[in-house]
Image (cartoon, rainbow, N blue to C red; front, side, top):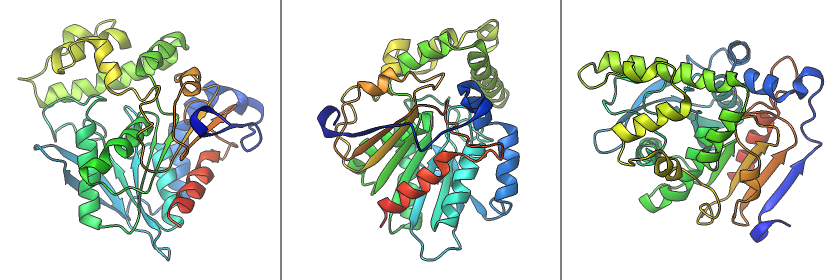
Length: 337
């Protein structure tokens, strides 16, 4: 038994990769690779043609893009809202695979693009940042109002997992009717996650900087009278660039306050009013496992700590299928029984 009666398992048996897949960096790089996206499109060839674009009114003039897919299975189990990671999108391989599996299991699926992710930089003049929780709750409320699902669940990966847990935490007070939340490798304490990325092999920080600077360049091109990021980008580190943007374009004033603004560390999830599952890997290169050990959770929050899996990987074989696929389907089906 773990802190405050939460259900915690150290998983040594269910996920047992072999050979090069034992390496956490191989797992992490494959998780969102083009190869896995190609595999997802082969496995679920009709997913895109079954998806309809939505532009959601999230309140206060904010618009977010999503894609809705309707299951052909019977009975319809409910609706799953899926959230991607930072600098991912609705077309990230892990989101496509999860959507395909859930559609086959009887869920309608909505894949949401966060602000300034995918091809959505034009929808809102202000920049994305990780504390923009209200608009994500607003998107979930818009989905609920439009489709009125019998049951509704939310699942996310990496930063999307952090958002999923915060939506589950704060959404019900705004009328959001959720039955379950699931998070894969969510950052718990963002300040520690930033330090972990700085300690990790440089390829991780460079990956995020390259993706982010490309996103900022698109934003600048669309709103040239509002933004000029060029002086900041030469030799920028993740820490320095985040700090500059926080100081210039948010109300948080300083980096530490901003990072604390989306932390779910310690007892912050104790107010969850619905069942949840949090899954991570002890060898995740970018999210420190120690943050999970200090969580103070409710008895209805399941914490699964896998020995291996990398960051959002859990790739089982060279067909690039992930153990997480089965776990998500099983947990979400159980939640809506």
